[in-house]
Amino acid sequence: MGHIILTVPHPRLEWIHKTGSKMGLFSQYAGQDRKQRIDYNHMQNLAKTTGLAIVKYSRFLFGANQLFILTKP
Image: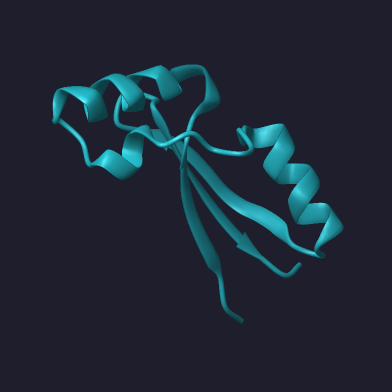
């Protein structure tokens, strides 16, 4: 069975991405506004409504980013 692997900025630390993008430390894409801010609870609800489950979650780069691995249960 396959997995879906997603990385998204953590909503509480998105300002780091915007600041780093403006300073040229990160890509311009890193500073773009997002329509939705996704945290663990939001992703868990999205996964349930689409018939998926989170099998792994972790934060990386000093907690500024999140890793989600999803699969069908």
